[in-house]
Amino acid sequence: SSLHRSMPSKILVTRPLPPAGDIVLQRASQAGQVELITRAEDSTAPREWVLEQLRKGDVDGVVCMLGDKIDEEVLEAAGPSLKVISTMSAGFDHVDTAALKARGIALGTTPDALTDATADVGAMLVLMASRRAGEGIRAVADGKWPSMPWAPLLLCGHALQNSTVGILGFGKIGQLTLKRLLGFGIGRALYTTSKPGQALSPSKDYFNLLSSSSSPGGIPIEPAQSLSHLAAESDFLIITCALTPSTTNLINADFLAQMKPTAYIINTARGPVVDSLALASAVKEGKLAGAGLDVVTGEPNITADHPLVKEHRITLLPHIGSATLETRGEMAREAAVNVLAGLGLGEQWVNEVKL
Ligand code: DGY
Image 1: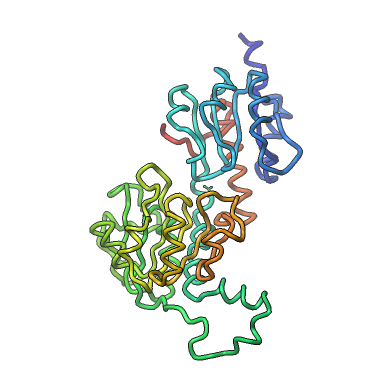
Image 2: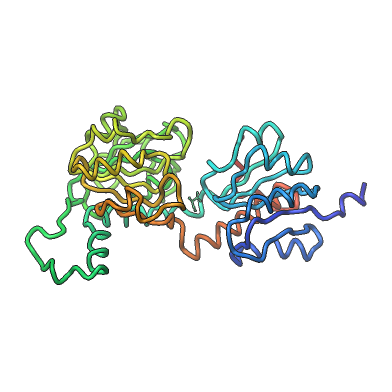
């Protein structure tokens, strides 16, 4: 009935959104299209609070973050009114997609907004790991510089020039990370992809490698013959794949044992792709030169006694790949647009995940 149509949709927003996203929802609220359930505190929503709000009933859409686990219990708490989950992230391993699919709930993500920002951090970690920047910063901050004057081999790492860069997961972030590294004179690139022949956008921003044999930057860029080939050949192994059952723990002791002792691991994807303990011991034992990580299994509950933190040749950042104000603003805007799109409130999806 028309009465029903004029009822505002209820949207639960698990924490305050950056202004560019907030304004989209506020406008819909002022127009009487939506009623917002929000929290004043800028922190990860306590799960109990989320469940409680959902159990009150009639919630149509949820805007959530990486730290909000969206599982069967959450969907059950929401009941049949729930139509859309919109996460302010590219990754959606925190969302039980099978459970959403079974209930006919749509999922929105923000996959394009963070490609450049994350590729920047990938390139930064390549440099930080290979030039031992984290180790140097730590030494200076700890007051150790006076006892470590310039020396021929002080804090030396391995050069990027002529290196082989391996990319595990050659999607948009992997391609743009590689594009940045071409400027440093790397020798060649090898990659793996779960989507051969697909998804490499013909846009000028990305390489269109699978449909042509072109070599941007004049270097060979080829698919790896196998994971072992990728492990054995890479001087820098850059992880930019999605976290799925088949990529979980892919970089384990077995894989690391096939790498060169002069090689580096870079991870801007998801922590559980890498076996943390195996990586920490490979670096400790000198079987690997170092690592640059933006993500780690168990984050954010990582303290100074964590094996990866204790290893000074490993630079570990607290998941800041997409952390520019511009990118986070755009992610928030897209998350707001997606939830309105999912509720049929006059917006087009920025990205709906095919479940
Ligand atoms: C994502 O969006 O998946 C990143 O990990 C955080 O921006």
